[in-house]
Figure 1 (cartoon, rainbow, N blue to C red):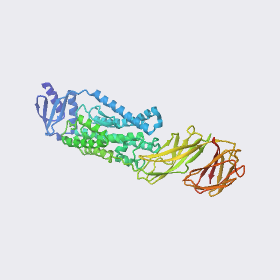
Figure 2: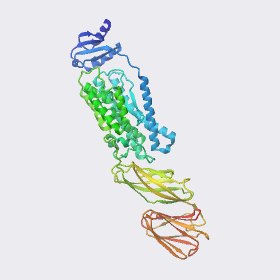
Figure 3: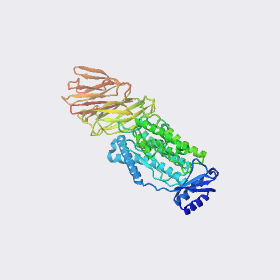
Figure 4: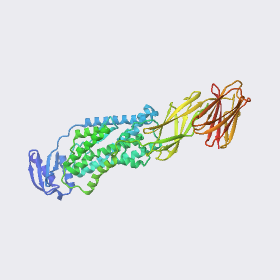
Length: 570
């Protein structure tokens, strides 16, 4: 170095330290001073900033407590384009995953709706989580007088879109304290924002469960972190079918937790390097082995290990690695361990513990012009050991709305749900069968309902009303009658709840017809009548059972012109 450069360096160092000697080497200057522990640690941070302005870098000698080494500031490598390319790849892959997940969660939204919702409810929240982590890093950098450097974003095209962020500083970290604050602030900010999104999404999961039968969720393979399980408190199903916003919070916490691993230039790597120095490389080796092991269960984790290996397993060393850590820095260092413990899923394999039973109050319905709505009421009993959020599917497809006491069922509880089917345009005249499937994780239960679509007629009516509405008392015998057209053949069906026994009686010309019917065996019991009745009027007598609330009776001809009676039991 030139003599004027040596003089400039001496003047700067003398502002903060007493100089014992200056030894000029070929590519560096070594300054001897008193024990650095005798000076405030902030002095060294100021020295670094002052020398950097002159084009030099200062650092301590880890083996000596009285030496400061100064070298020329190296040129920065130009890798901004690569970083921007990785950011773009992360955004595209994350948006793609969010859109696909949204499409599987709410398939009725359509392409445009899925694109919009996938971006708003997954890409944007997860980007906010990563942005919050960078904001925490920015605050810590400014607090320590350092400039912010754009990080390396790790895309994950095979998984959730991104594996998080790797630090890529263009300048060395000034101190061990600075490294701990930078790493811990980033993790804390990410933890808090991820949790907020998860809680908000959990509320949406509770009120708006998936409308699709099967949703491919990564939570089913990885599981939920301990923190999220505590927050859920039975609100979110263990099968991992989360609302896209809750999934974004889950992904944010998972990626934040993995970035807390003591590996290279990850946030946890900064902290471990600050605490353990060069010995932290052994923790990096263990972290890589752990990630590779988890990669067997969920291969995208290997992407993070590859990027970490490319950047380097040895974490950065601070310019000032001599001063002892203060107690508050040690507390911040513990943040990484806390994030790992609460953020990593303890059980990678997610076992579905769902089991449930269904009971429907009525399986058979009649519709006619102006009355095309069918309400299928059911009770679902959660006989499993984990909270469930049922999803519903109807085949053939028909529009329906879901209402119920609760969208989430705790173990041992049962709740009532109502599926309101809009059969307008979805049924043909006559008998139509629909299969209703109820899903929870990998468990599915199905049952069938029959909808009879008829055309109300005034050519024949029950009790001269179209339709007939009648109230009777329980256990009461009741009768209804109609006068069929001459030389006509009518069929009569009684629509009653399953597992209900009833008896009907019909007086015929050749004798009476009486039969006991078990609703669970023959839920719809048809019988044909012709004009050879005991009189011109058809009289039907039913013995009313105890377990019926509503009873529907339909008499129809070959073209499904019909008379309909609704019997309400009080």
